[in-house]
Image 1 (cartoon, helix red, strand yellow):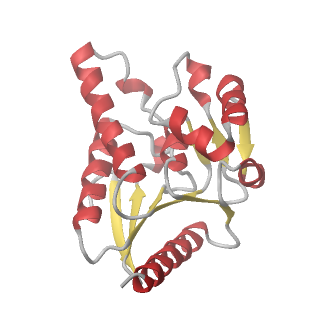
Image 2 (cartoon, helix red, strand yellow; image 1 turned 135 degrees about the horizontal axis):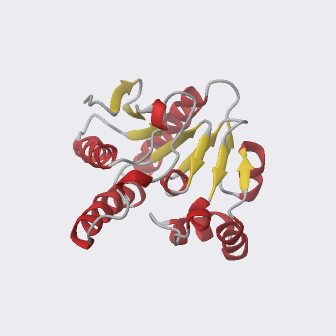
Image 3 (tube, rainbow, N blue to C red; image 1 turned 90 degrees about the vertical axis):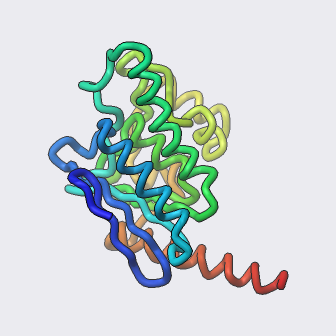
Length: 209
């Protein structure tokens, strides 16, 4: 599947790579990006050949968050936009297949939420995470109030939400916001981790058969 803002690629071992492809906008979650992500995730979960999913960005950036230009819409339109992006979060957090985030560059606001709800977050050393909602007068969204306490503990999550402080890859791993620091190419490291998860699942399945 390929669209103007999204590209998918199948890697060895049943890994589906989903890449956000609007680097000039730092892969912000425009309406088109939200819809394309939802469609790509649904297709991946429904495809028996796909065993795990890797989500990444492009242009050295993961995702800068929500599209500010798309905000301020009438209530029905705003609710529809929220429903689409919440479908994306549910497909990642509650879908039947493991999802790994490969984070390079910024993962701000909704982009940070997108990564945090994945089963595993692989971060580049220079990755930059920020719960930036408070900087623009918004409540943390896209599951952040659920995913951050699960990853970091309630106190650390609350502090990050209140401070809006940026943390880089190594500190993100220390805090639990990310799971692994990439040694080399971030996408390749995330694909390897996804392959490892598939292998573990197959081993566990064999034990109970």
